[in-house]
Image 1: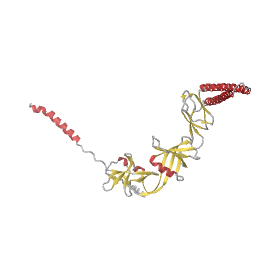
Image 2: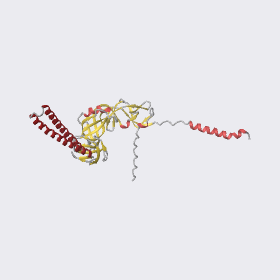
Image 3: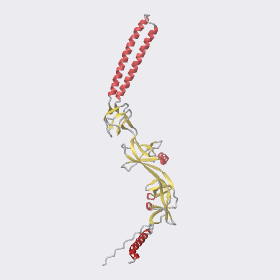
Image 4: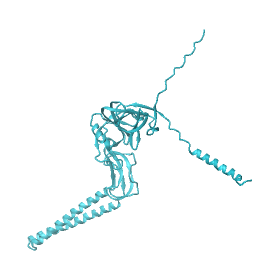
Amino acid sequence: MPHFLRLAPPLLLAVLLSALVSGCGKQAAAPEPVRAVRTQVVSASAASTSHEYAAEARARVESRLSFRVNGQLLSRAVNLGDKVKAGQVLARIDAQDLKLAQAAATAGVAAARTNRDQMGADYKRFVDLQRQGFISTAELERRDSAFKAAQAQLDQAKAQADVQGNQAGYAQLVADGAGVVTGIDAEPGQVLAAGTPVVRLALDGPRDIVFSVPEDQLARVKAAASLPGALKVRLWGSDKTAPLALREMAAAADPVTRTFLIKADAGKLDVKLGQSATVVLDFPQVAGVVKLPLSAVFQQGGKTSVWLLDGASMTVKPVTVQVGGADGNEVVIAGGLNAGQEVVVAGVHVLNVGQKVKRYVPPRSIAAPAAPSASR
């Protein structure tokens, strides 16, 4: 058999495989479908916007109670959520060293008093001797100075004893007012330094509704909150709102969240500590604004955008807009759109730049054929 005939079958197989592979790699990509979208023509209207902020109820005054002296915490008489009265003992530390120091100070007072009495008696005797001419006036003055120094030492010892008595009394942590325990920061057995928080106590009295607002909304919130009835609160689980009075605004932003803390007086509203709430701030009605459904906006590159439809080419492109707030189920557009433009209001998350679209036309309802009448 000729040599080229023996090589023909392998060569033919290689050619067929090469043709097959090249044919698979040249398949054309499927054309992108023309998507049907809902659109809306932009028109200006009037809107009264409102903003909602997550909030919680807090006590107007909340104390972090701590011992004034160092010591080991022996016992804690309250737990989280307990109600306490003014003057109630909350915790105790080991007072053995404090009692010893108090005893030493008391002994020092006794010694100073004995020395003062002795100097007083000597001074009286030297007065009689000076009258009889046995000692000089200078010697009497020295005895008088010694008596006054002994009196000063007694006063110093008494003051030191009072300080040590107070220190011994500080071994008990006492509530400075009636309230509720909202936090526990130390457990028995810990060695505490003076000033280390042990118990957090929310004092009875006025309550505040506390919430935070972004930096760019602070000026608007401050201006709108000054209007009567603009600031309201809705407690968790309720659909009713109650008026609030703005009480305090933080002068500096939180270093982590970059938001400003705002406190509003809850007034006579019956709220529980830590209860969740929603603060509603109504802004004055503004004319000539654009309102779109919430489904029309989307986030792109950290900015709020909408798809603008070019009627001539039936393609879409993103346009950045400025959101001014919400009005019910619609978003208020403060800038970026003009009246007469057509934007996509449904299906925005499946579109691409320059994509071909068509306007969605809802199917017409077809009336059911009438039933044939029965023959008599």
